[in-house]
Structure formats: structure tokens, C-alpha cells
Amino acid sequence: QVQLVESGGGLVQPGGSLRLSCAASGGIFSTFDMGWYRQAPGKQREWVAHISADEYTHYVASVKGRFTISRDNAQKTMYLQMNSLTPEDTAVYYCTRGYARGNLYRPNDWGQGTQVAVSS
Image (cartoon, rainbow, N blue to C red; front, top):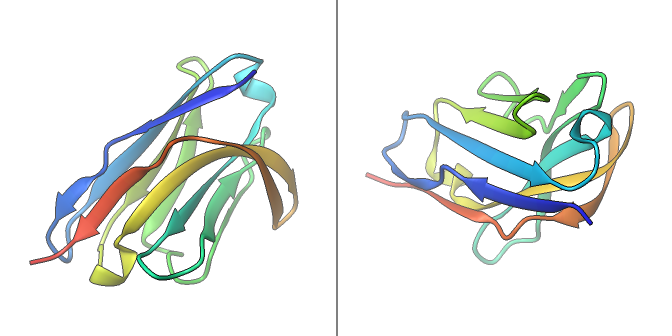
């Protein structure tokens, strides 16, 4: 069974940056398609980005050019570098393992989430 643990959330001012990490255990990480979701207060959970096992990446339009998803297979860790943060990025961010086909992604396993708050 795959376990996913996020870290790196916190409070940041608008325009600032954060890097989220997701450490995976169980299974063969290099074969995983991985992704990030987020859920803002009072809103539905939304897909943010995903990275396939062969490192193709896709992003929701609202974060394209500001967020970068990456992975380190040796460390069994996925990252989300978030730059130029705005209050609209405030949410709980969830790491997932799932199934990717091009720009389509279906999550199967979820982490517990990490809170990101963007406020002055």
C-alpha cells in the first residue's frame, strides 16, 4: 500500500514562494503517475498539476507559469514549486498517486494534505 506524506505548507505573503514536498513509501515510485490537488475554503477540490512516470507535466490554467511540478525518483519524492502566490492559492494541498493519460489524471491514493495560506 502506498503512503503519501506532504510537507512544506505554511503562511506566505502575496508574491511569495513555497515548495511543497510529497514523500512516498510502498511500491515502485518511479512507475507512479503523481499529482497535486487543492481545496480552498468553501470550494470543491480541484486538480492542480500532475507528472507522469516518464515526467510529462500538465497544469491547471490558473497556475501555469507560476507552479512547477517535479519528481526525484531516487528520493521517492514529488515537489510543487509555487511562485508568485496570490490569496486565491490559499488551500489545503493534497499529494496523490494516480493514473495519467496525457492531460487526463485520475487520483487513486491521497495524502493527508498540507495547508497553504497566502495573506499579508
